[in-house]
Image (tube, rainbow, N blue to C red; front, side, top):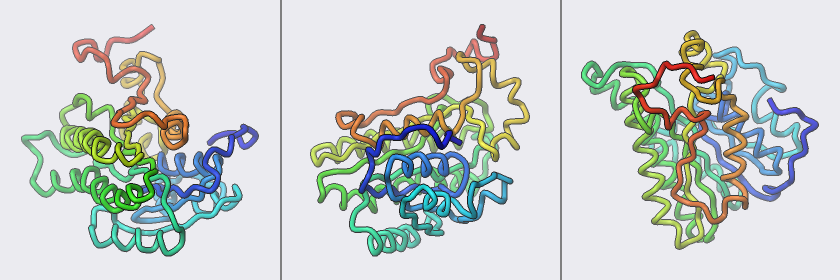
Length: 277
């Protein structure tokens, strides 16, 4: 993680950020980054202790404890954000604790493995769509009226470079879900722009989280040549862009999808696998 000695301007002091899927990996990196910028953070995950499942090392007992050690308030809420009832319960609990939500980061998702379109069962398809697109829709819908009323807010959705073009056949359902998140981002940005609410997305490429390195990371030597910048991404690469989108640095930016992928999203697919020097 980031060197504790690095200076973080308190751009988010007094603000509250809600981050889904934040008990490990990229979501954890976003939570700690925003806490260092002064935000109080609501950590959501279906399992708040899920870092242990992938042997991810924390600096305290939980991500919430890590945030508190940074001098910020933290609220952990275990909820399945594919469930409408769970999302409603989650935001009721949030607003019972904090008067406002300034930032929402829809990071929950996954389902990178699976099948090609023609081999995918309907249940497997629904599971990937729900985990990524439905969860993003439900959380956006829950917080949008509050931000619209306040005429202020930042919504950041996490898509993927796979949503720009399928990277491999077995990622097809995931790619469709992430492309849907991009279109949801653009549509909601148009809807909320008159109310001063910014809605943007990031599209990470291959990123070396602990969980990911145990899966696709086994073929990382084959993946690096696909990245023009010559390396895989890190959680901090993505967290820095989240910082930009969550702060006043991006106040006049909305409806955008920023690729955080070392340039791979713009490669001609005919040249995939060609090494960059």
